[in-house]
Length: 395
Ligand code: PLP
Image (cartoon, rainbow, N blue to C red; front, top):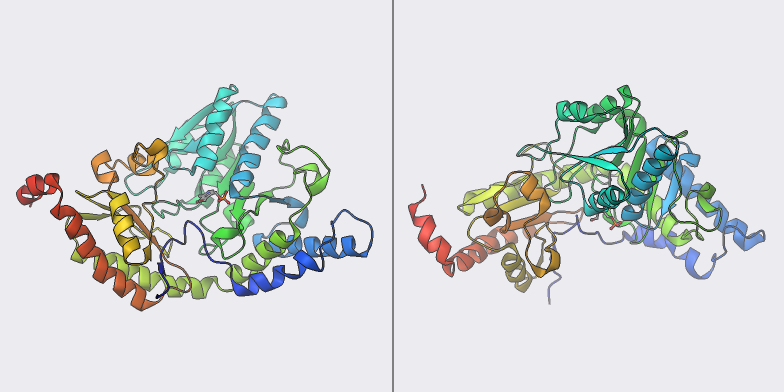
């Protein structure tokens, strides 16, 4: 059987063989605990220090400003809860600003803080998913202690003007966090150029292993730890360090950084061909997210008169791995909060499809999707009473 066509790189990526190779010695041979004093422990400590140094150089940070975590979700939790609670304890305020289109790792964290008495403003976005700097400026209060805005959106691929937004927060002396989980392979991660105080990453989105992430925390930013225990990570995140995972993360980030230009050069023309091909071949199809200010590997659509889940099942029969880009909560097929925030009506949001390319995506695979997808949509519409009723009357 032919290998599946994998177009869900925003969900996760395969581990690059070079990353796996770098990790392997740290499972069975160099398995020491970095806190142990003997040789094996020192070896693990050195691997950890080297990984931290590599990551710090890429982010243009110092090694002390990097905290390794168990995931991107944990990094987001640490950033938001950690800073919000530390600031409140200092009497600085209890107001947080974020956006309506964040990943649940941020949204649910903010909602949990609301239950603890924090106030949260969820900024709206325009039809392309962009946050307006003016709206951010207007939302700032004397009690605002943190702004958290994602670098690139996972569902619609829109890239936010982070440097501009962070500059506004900075001008008011407010800390700025960005969830850069979707950005790492495609966009520069220089925290100085971005002007951010905190930045989250997750290794499995850039050809590293699952279950390891990091948080960059600018020196001087107050932060309460969220995992209590030992004194690892300078007391900011307890627990024995995941040495193979961290070595994998650092190797993957180095490769992503070195190969970013080639990656973008590879993905963007394939993505453009895919988007144009779909919009040309399928009526009542709409690109979601920003037309140009979007991740170079990201194509997302809404198709009228079809259910996203049905498209996915049909594509799976053709060995094509895709995503609706939205989690259907409680089996009730809730329309995605992101598409809703973009002003897309629920009936259209139900027909969402996300196709995200990767470094191994081949032109033949894109052509195969362009062959299969129009027929899949036509088949589904053929059994849709709504389509029969409505489509004929539309221009
Ligand atoms: N933030 C964004 C934007 C994401 O896309 C994801 C994963 O889909 C996460 C956070 C969570 O990362 P992790 O899977 O490492 O917890």
